[in-house]
Image (cartoon, rainbow, N blue to C red):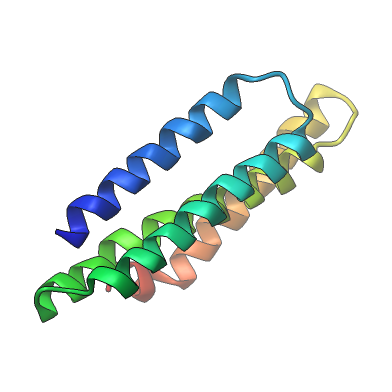
Length: 120
């Protein structure tokens, strides 16, 4: 039961974030309002866990391995996306392309160094 409700909260959060993304906002305003939406839904999921609890150890494992990380990964993604976008050099296309390649290289290196975490 908690899995279904948590998944519904995640879908609701995603829909709100998509709607927010369609609005003409500055990058800072979009990030702030998006983080507010995510934080609100993380709190709602935590409240759900506190009030309903888990029906079995398997449900609890599934929740903490698969459901809860979705909320936090969305938050991490938005912050990192903002950092990348806000640091784009205002220069030639060549320098901008080099900046993106450097960022992609950093992301690849990070995932290669942390393979064990993602395979868990």
